[in-house]
Image (tube, rainbow, N blue to C red; front, side, top):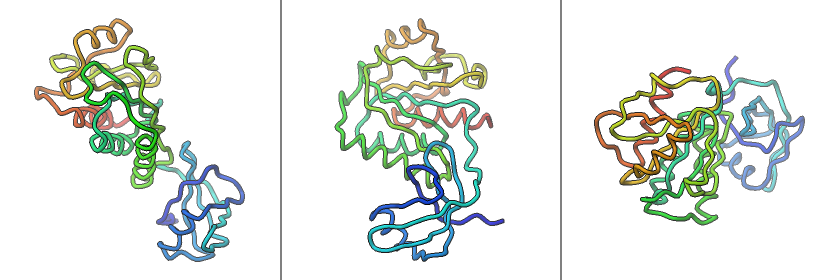
Length: 232
């Protein structure tokens, strides 16, 4: 059976769901009417059909239908921990990381970072970027973009891979889906030797992204793309 084309983010999947003015306007733009079907997802991995019951200028009411499968997720949650970059570059990283399957995005303040902090408005915007990328890629998960923390205080979970030029280990040689996976990338100029050494001393594995030096906004995409290409 063909699935509905349009997808909506809802706070939770419930028998009856009432959406606010912004979502109602979006449905009007799509020219949807009462009786039309859409797909709804909660950002936590659950997705279902829904029928538009009522639609006016200020609200929309949906009734829940049968559950459907969203895009496949990794066997365990995948986290990107990336050094702070300038706003537009960071938005590009968040967008691509969402499409490539991350479950959350941690922002890091590193020794060579061009940016040392990020405002609440920019953080909220990055959250919207993740939500739109999730809709576009038909995922049922919307990654949470966390406020930045110093690299020294960051506590990565599970297997930890850090991108470091000059390393000899390849992702395919070390990746094991037996626990959550965290990947760490640096700013322009890269992580310092001391930062990488500290991560390795705590169990991280330094991996190569090939023979070329990549820009800070390219490295996360290359690392996540290598993981995605393994087909897990």
